[in-house]
Image (cartoon, rainbow, N blue to C red):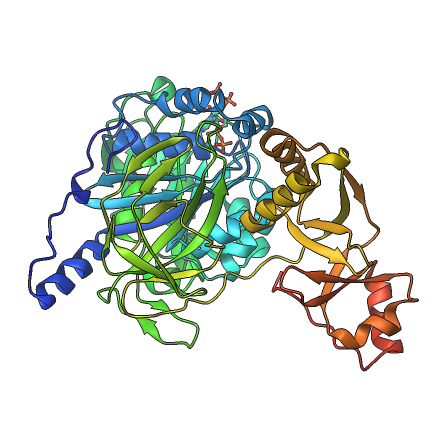
Length: 547
Ligand code: G4P
């Protein structure tokens, strides 16, 4: 295993060879799991996710100077069509996993696309993490476009750490931001660091855990680690008496309203420890990275479909949370990203695909960051392994060694956009079908068919950009130009064969089948939904997801 700079990361050598006694081996796995922190950063595009990620790598000693990640991103996009699209749009569609060590801990940082249109992709990534960092731009707070992502995070009760970024420039009032977080996503902020001075005229922060004042030091673009100047608040020479007074007032107000750090409610996803800083100038980066180690939870025993717990030290198991094909035009292969839930993964080991009960050898296992792949030999709970060309794995599928387990499926989002799709080139029907199935398998779009004698495919998505990625990839990877025609339908419900006949003549509804052959109904509007419910009370209609 290597890090981003291609150097070996210590934790992945075989420190605990499997020749030890079973008990020693189980202890070794548990202690490896305990030093893992697996999390995602969720934010609105431009809030500073890339900058913060890069500063984490700087503080972890993985890169000598900030600036490398963007440069690498630029290089990668030259070799991949769809990464080129990401760069044009300034968004990230291809989630990647970055792994590094910090304070003897192994940090797995899973990337998420910072756009509402890819909420479903984020949702899958969130199924594979133990915590998340929410990065907000101090000037913008919670933006409408990403509210859904934060709601998803809160809905899954994932412990969230919050970083209010860009405090070096003018922004919203901190108390207003706190209020916004609580009212919009229903998670209560508990400030760990509290700003002194307003954003734009930022003096520093108070660490509420020890009441020390940490002076803000400007680091021009922060390419190197920033030092910290700390003192008691009363001894701060750079603060006016008014500013000192106001800060003290705010601190006592926070105490009075009970906004103190509470790890118990943070772990339950009810409160969010909040940090203030400026990723660009490195201020506050260390506070939040330390919080990942000190506050964020390590991997815990995962719950299986029957509600039982799979102990961390039990034989290897995991589930696929992302499938990506053709990431690199030179390889044209398929990578399944698997979160390790229990045991020790060893490259070459034979594992079983729970759904098909087929076994296969994991000859090609890699860490994947964009197009860069490094072989993984050993991985522990919390780690992510990229299995290359691992058979018929689909999103949510479980894998295990010796002791069977099935993890709960990852719920899908109810799509809001439904479109007919046809190939503009009739001679390419085979490639068209293959491309459609591949995109559905990866979750780029959801795929349905109407009930016509020759079924017409209908693609569905949460956001328009998913369709754009779909058609871009069909042209570039399958050489099939497609035409996408929007339908009038906006809602989807699961039903049964009893609905086919009565709904034939209802103009606001269309019966379709999903890829497993289940009967679903596309509905034009809430009006038509209540019409059908009132007119045909015997037709069973159920929501397909929580969202
Ligand atoms: P993203 O991944 O969330 O989309 O955001 P990214 O880190 O790319 O940051 C978006 C822009 O915000 C960048 O500016 C970045 O330099 C700036 N930025 C990030 N953190 C801070 C901060 O703490 N303070 C200030 N003032 N700016 C910050 P850009 O002009 O788009 O790119 P660049 O030319 O600086 O590379």
